[in-house]
Length: 65
Image 1 (cartoon, rainbow, N blue to C red):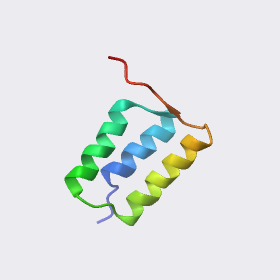
Image 2 (cartoon, one colour):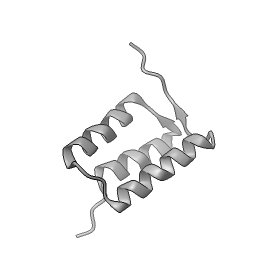
Image 3 (spheres, rainbow, N blue to C red):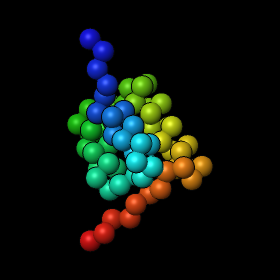
Image 4 (tube, helix red, strand yellow):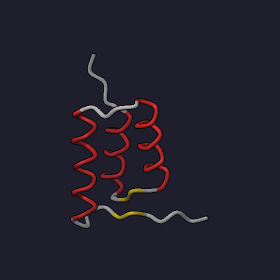
């Protein structure tokens, strides 16, 4: 069975919309907490997300409260 992890799906969504929203960030954090570890695939996805943020291709959206 070949399933895509929740973290990878959230990273793909952030890359697609070119924004890291508070909801996506919370979803990633919640999944990391739930799992208690990070797989190699998830690590690579998060590394890609950080690279995209560093290069300015994805924008961090502030939390509006």
